[in-house]
Length: 242
Image 1 (cartoon, rainbow, N blue to C red):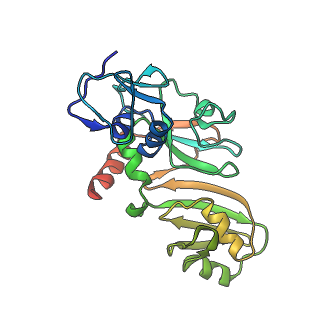
Image 2 (tube, rainbow, N blue to C red):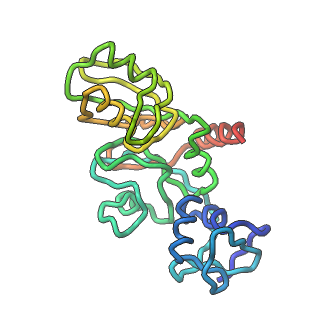
């Protein structure tokens, strides 16, 4: 089946717009030789023109006619990947009837809010670190929190294993061993690494907000569609940043 597109676009953008994956993941699939255009293996930078057939793993890539935006309360143990090779992948856990994929990640031991969509362009913008999108977390650690710990977390933490210093952030003590933190970046296991720097170990980590989307009282393991107002506010913020 041949897909109609408005003009020539790069293969990673086409796959993203089709809701298959993010542009970054699309580049990976292309490098693996999983994508063809009119029967020929695509290369990085390949452009797709109107009327050409794009296939992934031998199956035609069809443009989704309806855009989907979901909020999901991820339990511990679920892995934020669309790969079927992972038994506990988030796509099977959600069980949505049409193709979607996660926007960003929460590590396997963390829980809480993650967005899923088939809108590749929006997903790409949300994940860009330069846009400083807020993500809010509730964290419990293994011992009593001190004021020095809170101040240290706020002011930027050197992470030698990632060769970087974290951005300054908002941190508020919530209880003897718990705090709330708002990040504008998404480094690998960032909060856990930040806590470890000060000699603390995270025992529970739950994300409760991404930009204007809040977890609220969504039951663990359940998902809901974003409201029209949530989608409107989300897109307005993304447009302002372009």
